[in-house]
Length: 140
View (cartoon, rainbow, N blue to C red):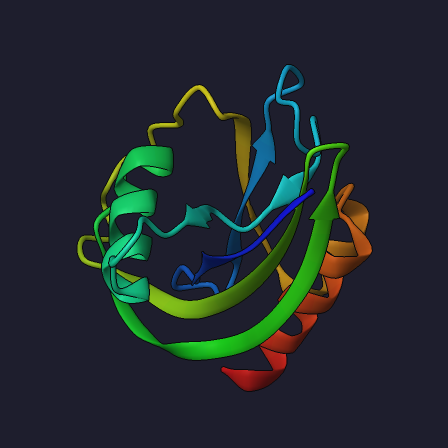
């Protein structure tokens, strides 16, 4: 079994109402189909986490952001018959470069929603993502 580590970044993007942007994964995705999450993704080899997040947010939601500061760091394991992956995830506070930007979802997601802190529990999230979002709100 191959084992390796992967770094992952997430964008905790707030609007003027202090609502966070959540995206819903495509129902056809192999990984967590139909669940809500922060936008983001994996870093490429040698890519700085902030540059990776800027790229991922352009690709996934069409947004240009300023990456402010890390809010939450955590890790988890993924395993299948051929490999075991240790993912280390950094979630960053992000602000929009232009508040009038239109969100354009990639094929990876089917919906988005701006969500107030008290409403996060109404969305279908993994326990890991609930903890991440809660910690991000506590650390802004």
